[in-house]
Image (cartoon, rainbow, N blue to C red; front, side, top):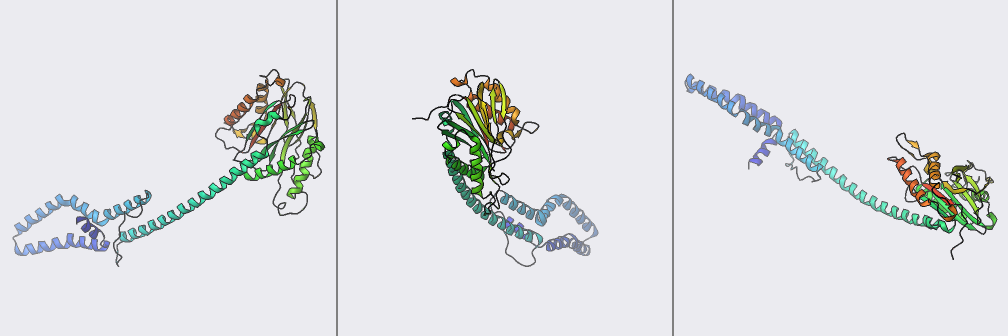
Amino acid sequence: MWRNILDWLSDLGIRMQVRTLVLISVFIPALVVLVQLETSPVESVTAGLVMYLAAWVLLCIPVSKFLEEILALRNITLCNNFCRSLQEGKGLQELSLPPEKGGENDFIRLKRNMYWMGRSLLDREHRIAGMLSELEEAQRQVMDSIEYASAIQHQMQAPAQRLRDYVADGYILWKPREVVGGDSYWLRRTPGGVFVGVFDCTGHGVPGAFITLIVHSMLDAMDSASVEGRPGLVLASLNRRLKTFLGQDGTETALSKRSNDGLEMGLCWMPNAAETLCFAGAGISAFLVRDGEPVELKAEKMGIGYRETPLEHTYAEQCVSLDGVAGVHLATDGLFDQVGGEKRLPFGKKRFLKLITELSAHGDSFNHGEHPFKALQTGLWELFETHRGVQVRRDDVTVLGFAPGRVRRERA
């Protein structure tokens, strides 16, 4: 009952509350004194005033708290509790509103405004929750599609563990930045040897992965006999086919108006006897370790398939002896360009060459499979991650290395 009385008093208009207090505290005591002066001796009136003042001294704090509660604190507490309930997600149950009527005080209007503001926030929260649920479902469907695209991309390229079906020994470090990526590698057996290469297509993620599928299809469609031992011829043929397919050969298509796609590629051909190596590069160089020293077979800067690349561009070939060569390595720029360390510097070629040179020194006879390629693959990735530290991965990373031993024959 007392709570209801307090609520009724606190819900009175501010003006009504102030006027009532002024009336009680000023006029009523004065009227009582005047009446007493007419009916009682002065000594009795004086004693009454003294008792009145003493009572007010004793009751000052309790009465002040009561008036504070009625005038402001009760409504402020209700508003604070309401805000806390919204913050804790309890809804609107902490705020009860009296029926609407004219002449409401400011606190009543404030509570009513807060109530409808809370109602609006809760309605918006429910709509956002519904939208998030729909977004999560859409994201799940997209991720399912990307996972399926990843399976297709894996199917298009030979499994990394099958590299030894093409060369004596080796490793493949293939690390897309996302589930799928624009980096890939290509292995192809010819009657007289094998092609081994890596390539880096425009972009990363799903767009880059689409280009890798196109490139794999075009490479696999080439006639082995016509490109035997000619990695430069393979790159030139791929350039013509890709430019024509993407409409970047001068013809106007809907795709050509908005795209300038292509790739960089480093491609090696090694004969079955593994005495020499022929290399052609479009943006990706080959690195050899010969007699304990790194050697770079530099690639051309002209990419494959881009608008600025001539349709009939030819790629130069470099043929070198494999005598004393411990390993051949190809890497995309996602390895070299990754920044890290305290000074946020790129990983760089120097760090890579130092690692492959040091680990190559651990093997005495690479033709007998003693080259520590597994240790090289593990050590390279650990070094890359240590260098990257807290920095975000910038690109896909692909590194392929192989021992120049006698080419293995196709499995029966």
